[in-house]
Image (cartoon, rainbow, N blue to C red; front, side, top):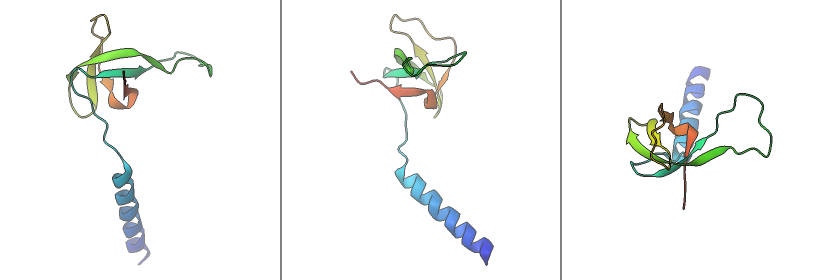
Length: 88
């Protein structure tokens, strides 16, 4: 009986979460900001996002290839959780 209620509760919570989540995806040519990588501690005033980049290739639902504003491709792919849309 308790297992059944737990299962019902979990499925109800999953449905509520899925209704609120907005899928994040980008198309080729979109401008995005990339989360900065830090090797050490980061101060409160430091930039959290790098300059805008252009999406050059969509590899799947998560990974993207980017190039910088001057046209140089970045050496590796970037996951969608490290990117956000850049609005001009």
